[in-house]
Each structure stands twice: as structure tokens, then as C-alpha cells.
Length: 411
Image (tube, rainbow, N blue to C red; front, side, top):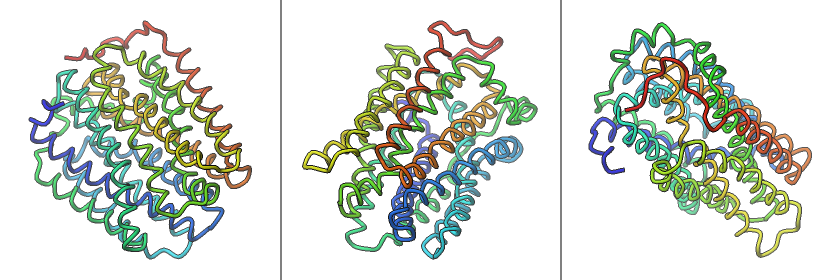
């Protein structure tokens, strides 16, 4: 992966993204504990709704942001969204009502919905080589994984010194540092593909591309499988750890960190795996691993806690993280193989909206089921969703699925 670090622009953009993700990770832990303070045993329902609001923002805003990104400098867009996110994070510690959480989450995630597709569409322009682009995708996934591992560990350390409200201050600093790094970078614009991107930047074009390409439909199904498994991690961990296992608040970030550790290990191994195996051969088995792990979570949550329960939870969350990473990381390769240069902004925006539509389904499902029917039923239902989605991907993505006509061939 060392070759990608020779690109100065990528180094700065990646660092900005990683710093912002660290701040977001602190906010995720703080938001879980804030929900627990505001709603008690119904914290999973509150958190599930808040994350559903986040997904609504992603689904609704990303297509609009795609059109905007083709008309203004990307650096301006990226910096502006970081500043908006910093302002919202600054306000979160002062909320006293649940509805205020929902409003602020919507504004913050609307800015993220503009930032992420613009960032994703910039990376292919920096790495024409397929091998370098694969390495860049793995390092981006590694940034998410390091955030999942480092942010909870940092949060756990900080919670021994300060209240969780101060974690939001770390979020503010992360977004401000990200904005400063982006300002120092030379960010490429749409370039020679700009005219085509402006002409075909609407969400409808990207959605048509997904629905008309077998491997992209399979990618969407796998996104749903990952969302079903990931939702129980991000929504129900706080209730599982605090109420079912009876562990302290500091154990919540440790459990989330196990997910990040599994995902990070997979991201480190993927470049070598993807040189030997096709995307399909890596992604589909990982998709079927997710419902298998959730079956174990059903057993874990249906039995009385014992000495084995905490290690079992950490192992399960690490396995979910590993499988999700194997499903999600190669997604950028699949999209780039199925879209021309001019179509990449629309394709990434469509994938962003459609994949987060999957999370829009699973987040509230994880929260409301946990509050109303209990954790074992929640794990069983989400496991069934994950299994159905992985099966659909297997059926939709044949081993020799053709690329669309006139698609750009990777370097």
C-alpha cells in the first residue's frame, strides 16, 4: 500500500478523512450515552430512530449533492461540509429533548451526505491504475476501521476523566482539522469528465445504472446484508452491554472497538486477496458469514449472561466487522468497473443513497425490535434479512456477469 502515499493530494485528503472519522467516532459513543441518559431502557429505540434520521438525510441529500458537486469546486464543497458538521457537533452537548437530537443529527448527516460522495468520486481521478486504486480503497476502509478501533478506545480513556459531553468537543476539533487539511491540498475537479458528469449527474441516471447492471444489483443486495448485521452492532450494543451484560459505560466503546478490529484486519488482507480472487469470490462468502454470526448472537442474547458472554460478544462483533469489511471494501472496484469516468459521480452518489436506504430499513428495525420484542428476536430477524440479501446477491450476480456496453476498462 505504500505506493498510494506518494500522492501528496491523496495523503492530505486521506488524513483529513481519517481525522474527521475519529471525531465522528467520538460522537457515536457520546450519542449512544446521551440517548441512554434521555430514554433509559428505551435508548435503543431512540438511537435507532436517530440513525434512521441519519439515513433519511443520506438518501435524500446525496443525489442533490452530486449535482452540486459537478458545479462548484470540490475543495469548497468538502470544506463547507466540514464546517457545518463542526457547528452541529458544538450544539449537541446542549440538547435536553429527544427531538433536538433528531434535528441536529439530520443537519450533521446532510453535510456528511454531501462530503462522502464528493470524496469517493475524487479518489479514482488520483489513481488511474487499478492496482493503486484497490490499495487506495483498502486504505480508505482502513481509515473507517481505525476509527472504529481508535475512537472507542479514545472514548473509553476520556470517559475515565470527563463526562461524555466532552466527547463532542473532540468531534468539533476533528472536523475543523479536516477542513484545514483539505484547504492545504490541491483537489482535482471533474476534469475532462466534467461536462458528461454535469449532463448525467442526476440521481435517476445512477439508479438506472445500478438497476441495469447485474453486479451492481448484487452489490446493493450485499449492502443490505451488511446493514442488517451492522445495525445490531451500532444500535443495540449500548443496551446489550449495559442492561443484558450489566457492564459499565466504558465497556460500550470496547465492544464497538472489537467490530473495528475485525474490520481492520480484513482491510489489511484484502489487497492480497483481491489479486488472487475476483471480487465476487470474496464478497459473496463474506455476505453469507453475516447471518451465521447473527445466529450466534441469538444464542448469546437468549441465555443468561455468564463468564463467557463478554468474550463471546467481542468475538461476534469482530466477526461482523471482518465480514462487513470484505463485503463493503471492494464495492468501489465494482462500481468503477461498471461506470465510465463521466458517470462516476452519479454512480457513487446512487450507491451512497441506495446503500444507506438499506441502513434506513435496518437501523429502526434494530432499535424498535430491541425495545419491543427483545434482543434475541432482533438478532433473529436481522439475521434472516441478512441471509435473504446474501442469497439474492448470489442469484443476481452470476459468475460471468457482463459489463455494460461502452464501459471504461480499468488501467
